[in-house]
Image (cartoon, rainbow, N blue to C red; front, side, top):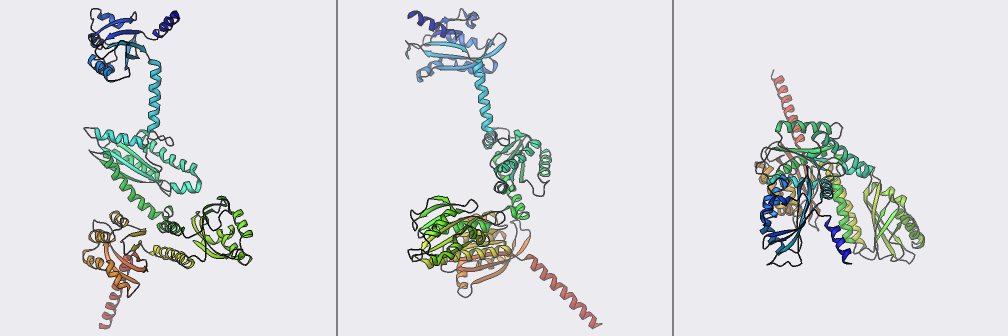
Length: 594
C-alpha cells in the first residue's frame, strides 16, 4: 500500500517541473523537486526566498509584460498577508521563457500541514499550463466577441456602445467625435405584412450598408430598429463626406430605408451628449418622413381610439357576464370571463364550433335571425369592415334576454377585421347605461376622425382635472406635449403662449383658452372659436394664422374637445383677393374720371 502511495505521489509530482518547501516566516526555502534547468541555480548562494524571487524577475526569464505583476505578487509581505487572510491557495499565472519561447505557467502556493500564522510553512509548485490556458483565453475572446456583437447584423451591440461610452469618459484628452443615429422606416409594417424573416433581411440590409461605408467596428445596432455610427478622431470634413454617402445610399429607393440624425463635436466631455443630439435630430427627420409618408405611421386617432375601447371594456367588464377574444382569420376564440354561460363552453377553441353550439342549443327560435347577424363569422367579417362595433339583444331558450356586443380591435392593411372582443350581459342589469356608453364611444371616434382630416391638432380636455389626451399633433413642441401628458393644461397653454404666440395675440389666447372662461361660454354656446397668430418654432420664424375651436363634448363628464387648424393659406388668399378687388375698383374709377 505504501509503495502504491509513493508511486501515486511520483506521478503527481511529474506534472510539476518545480516544487519547493518555503517558510515565509523565516524567509527560507528548500527543494522537493527541481529541474535540470532550474532557474534558481544561478542564485545558489542566496538562501532567502524573497531575494531569489526579486532577482529572478529581472533575469529576462519572465515575459516583459508580466514582470510588473510578478514582482508585486511574489513580494513576500504580500504572500504572507494573502495566506493569513484567505483560505484559498495563492495562485499566479505568468509567462516564463522555456528555451526559445515564452509559455504560460502557474505558480501555486498552498499551506503545509504544519502551517500556522506565526510559522507560515508552505509548498510552492510551478507547472506548465500553456496549452490549456491559451485555449481558455481563446474561449474568453470568443465570449467577449459574442457579448459585444449583434448576431443578426455582425455589428457591435448596445453593450459594446455602453462600454465605449464608459471608456470615452475616462480619457483625459478627448478626441473629436462624429455620431450618426439612424432609425429604420417601416420595420413594423414589414414584420406585420411579410413576417419577421423579411424584417430580419430588412435590418441586415441596413447593417450591410453601414459596414460598407464605416466598417463593422464603428457601427452599432443598439435596439430592434435603431443604429449608431461612432467615429472618434475624425475631422468634420471627412465625417460629413461619409454621412452624405450614407444618405445617398439609403435614399436610392422611393421610401428612404431609415431616418438619420447626426452630430460632430470637437472635444466633447461625454460621448452620450453627442449621441443624444444626433438622436434629437433623427426625430426631426422622422417627423418629416411621416409628413411625406403618412401611410407608414398608424393614425394617432386610431391608436388612441383602440386604447379608449380597451379602457372602456376593462371598466365595464365588472358588469358584463361574458368577455372573450376572437381571431377572425384563425377562427379561434379565447374566453376571458364566463359568468352568463358558465361551464357551457371550453376556455378556448374553434369559434365556428362555439357559435353553432350557442346558436343551436341556447338561442330561442324568435332570436335566431338576430343571433346570426351578431355572431356568424361571415357577418362579423362583413359588418366590422366598415363599422367599429355592433351590438344587439337576443332571447335565450330559458326566456332571459342577453345583450351581445362585438368591438373590432385590429384590421389588416386592406381594412379587413382580424380581431375583436365580445362581451355579453343580461338586459335587466343597467342595459341602457351600457348602450349609451357604447354609443358615446362610437360618437367620440366619429367626431375625432372627422376633425383629424382638417385640423393639425386635436385633443380632449377634462376641465376638472386638467388632463389632456392628444389624438393628433403636428408640430406641437415636445415641452408642451409633456406638460399635457402630466395633466397640466394651464401650464401647457401658458408655456405655448409665452414661447410661440405673437405678443399682440397672447392676451386674447390666454383669456379664451382659460377653462373658467370656457365654462361660462358653454352655458350660451356649445362651441367657442377664435383666431390667433403663432410662430412655428421658438426662433420666431414662419408666422402662421391659426383657428382654435373648443367644443363642449360631454358636459356631465366635464370633457371638451380642443382643435387647432392652420388657416394661413386662406388668410393670404383673402388678402390677395381684396388687393385684386381694390385694383379693379381703382381702374374703374380712373376710367369714369377720364
